[in-house]
Image 1 (cartoon, helix red, strand yellow):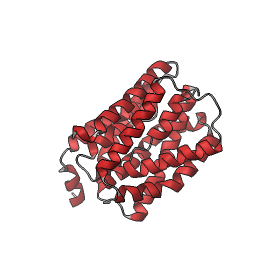
Image 2 (cartoon, helix red, strand yellow):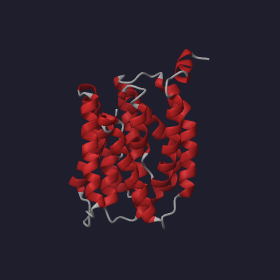
Image 3 (cartoon, helix red, strand yellow):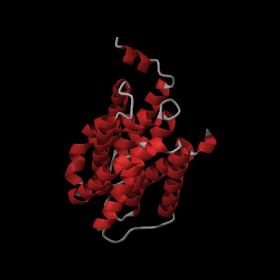
Length: 250
């Protein structure tokens, strides 16, 4: 057995990581997002933030195989292309900030932004207009920075889509494809920069099986007619992320 695999199996908290990624897969399969917001607060207790960002993006790519074919048919390809282009440009900035800034400070920033945005959505804010090019660039770019900083690839684009009046099927499809693109960009940038320890690949392999399995189960549970449940699940996931990520709870 390779030494790196033995180290991965001996990682303190591996059982918790497997259980958490399994629960996150259920949510991802049903809602199209949520993995990072559930998994990152747990994983950062056992692994360096750079390894967590890489782990989150790499496992996200694996889960995409279960969700992308249908999502690609349903998504708005022009909108997703613009979001993905902006995120590609800003991910390196997010990774640079991750290295430079204290991790506790980053957690406060992420919790604050996500909490305030969730409050706006829950209290009734809705986007009624068409998302034009400057708005798409701003949202995609912000998602790239936040994803690179923390591994939380979804919150910026998710809270926008949940606040919109877009059809729930298209929201889910757009989110799935955008997060897949962002995951690929993050993995590529980490590999070329050497920011993460590549022995983390063994942990990626150990987590991919439960993650892919529960993602497929969550996908089977998805029903676009249950929009109210969909939004409630999404709001709940974001709220859990905010509360569990607060440094005060360490």
